[in-house]
Length: 481
Image (cartoon, rainbow, N blue to C red; front, side, top):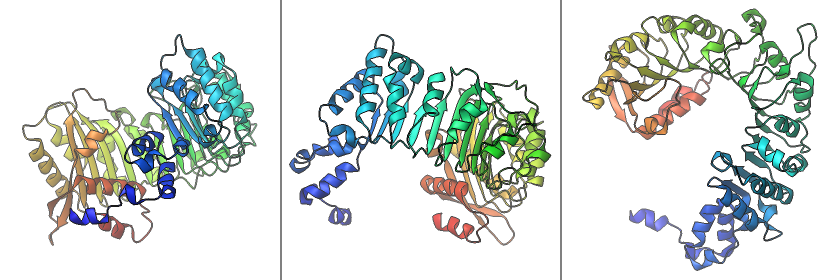
């Protein structure tokens, strides 16, 4: 403890320039807290900390912030990022005109704004059209997120004057029909756009027929996210030729596409640069991607879609596989997966178990992987064991003995009575997980050494990002652990 005290830097020993630099790197709330720690900090101007502001309490907070920001002519020029969360925009009845006017005033004054995120944008723009003109006019805008939008969102997103646009996140809930050229053709003018996320556009875009190929191309795009938004796979591959990360999730909310599926033969050449594919198993018939990937996320995998999932793994040859599923003895995916996934290195599974015999089928499914190096198992069980810690150790021993190359095992055991299979891994599940390193003897049998949860989670993070074609990837893994 004394060593840490010796290395500590006291605020009183810092001059104003250093304290000012620290202030400029903090959020406004943190800067305000720092200003109360000593007299030297209290005398500093906090305006540089206005660089990134999040309004997340109420509409009154937004209006108070607007009044504070505009009280000094120089303050708006410090603002680079403004996020207005759903808590503020959830219920604007009775105050929407005042809130819309406040946002418009901020946008007109903060001319150096680079990041803007806001919900209920359709209602806000209808209440005050200066919001639309203010966003369009921003010359330094890099990142724009517009939620609960419609025609207004489309009009803003396709008319931005900033030459620096890199990230667009658009929720088109109330959008009407549009032509492919009118929407995506105008998005293509942003030569630096790297990420495009569109949700709830459904099939309102009129796509060109196969006989009339589109000449629209956005080669700068690296991340494509389509939620409840249809886009033909072959057209997506030609429109966004250099995508490295793709998400396509539609069937859960919008199951009845009228468009014919693309055959795997037509899709084999798409996206040679693809590294990650996040696609619900129910969408594989519509988007049968055949690109080789590092990480395949099947989101929710039900037994009725096991054939499509097996075909996808066989085509894409992932090194990392993640999914959520409910234990089903008839799910053929897990029976065939060890045979076709010979290069699988990491498996991340969220498992919803409703019976009182979870181990039988779980171990049947998660066995015989020839190259599996790490496994994270998030068990959401209806029936809780008497001794959860002993159950976790026992499952880890069984997994280690059934997978000859397995080196790291993480298991989270939580109450699944109020859980759904498509829930993400919550923070409390991650932080309560127990991790083990497998120590192999000469005969191949494995003993378990418990490792800190923090170390195990670092292993999990690394396995998602590792370059498995690099010869040193395994050495780096052991350096982390």
